Image 1: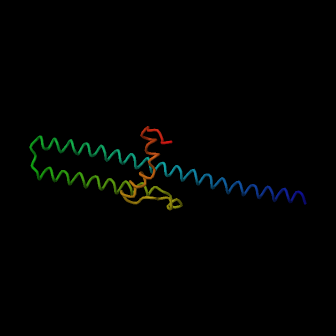
Image 2: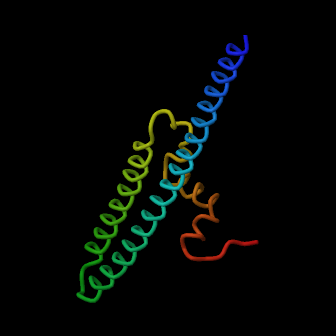
Length: 135
């Protein structure tokens, strides 16, 4: 009878361990997914910032070389379309890489909601920028 009790306690302990192990691993995986999303968005934001600097420089060079107003406006439209396409495809690709069993963890699906997601996680952004967390 004691052997049966030991066997049942062992089986109960084994399945309890498996349950909590899976829960802990899922929690860690979700944490890594969120960090990857935040990092990807920050890299995208930095790329758009550098793109904006390049755009401003190119416009000043066009003005310096006496380009027509029509050429400058066409360049601005082209660059704005390029940035909008970059935003849309980057957000789509970030979300496409999320496994289906974590689809509930997707918190953004467009640029505005992605920026709200980053704004909600300001502590992480400040940490990556080298700023100290507020106590």
